[in-house]
Length: 125
Image (cartoon, rainbow, N blue to C red):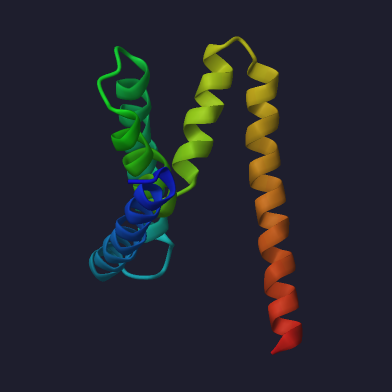
């Protein structure tokens, strides 16, 4: 099976899981804060940490399983998980300034981009 199909299948299930988890959390905690998004981001970060470690340490995951879970499922479940692991890798590799820059740029640029997208969407509609 091609790698792209494997990743796509993982993404299919990840996106559906993100929706279901977010909806469940919203039912439990309400919609006053984006708790559903926070939940998938935290859970996704945790799970990608496990997947990354299993893939790197002793090849405990096949390339196929790693692609399905890490890139596909968790990539669609949340991209925040990738950001988190990459930032930790920068810290662990002795690059705290790069890690801080990564954090700052992700937060600032994503907020600015979201504001820009909302502004354009409001203008169009």
